[in-house]
Length: 258
Image 1 (tube, rainbow, N blue to C red):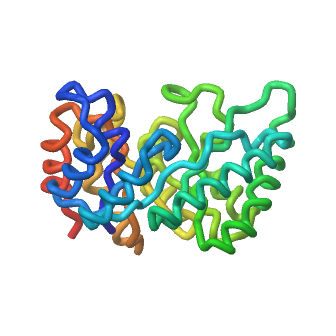
Image 2 (image 1 turned 90 degrees about the vertical axis):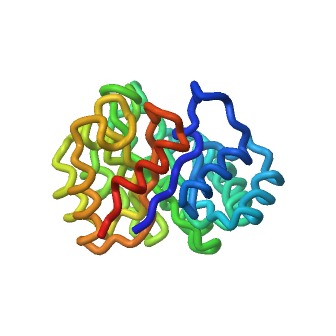
Image 3 (image 1 turned 120 degrees about the horizontal axis):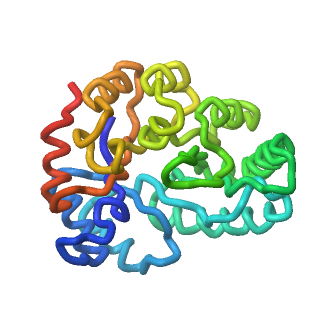
């Protein structure tokens, strides 16, 4: 298991000074990380990004596909176009995992129909995912604090969804911060369903700040994830309460998983 800072969250509206893309990546490397992730690709200079990751010997762990609804059946063709564009970028960056959201719930369509639209949309993605060997990570988000109106919030529904889609290239992104707000029972929900999870995000609650600032015992959680057999990346998607470079350094010092 290893850690992957999200450069959008870690340096979000940085009160210590706005840092350009390259400097953010330099800090990631200087503080001891070899992977990173981000949100949108379409607002970044991809040529600069490619040059920087080669120079710093960094790996792009994951980033988001375009924000197009999957619960709206009329948007599926548009979603597939966006996915194809994003996979092209992923290949350029040497990345094999992409994050997707589901879109917000529609008020004029029964929830079960929206769920089936979501299944149908994800199944339509499978051939292009398999052809390119890219995994799509479906992310449940909390409704109470950060994403009111979003369709998919519970992990059990997310696990049922990827089982129904039935492809090793469609998995769950388990965001521990979001799931603590939504349902709690974090360790059991993870360890009972690890086969369906292919990435994690972490932040503490309340506040979405670095682990150790809230109610989640990340020493126990991370140890349980490792002992369950997970060997992949854990994304640091938190908003630091201190200088980002210091926060990243402190995290590695405080959360060594034996």
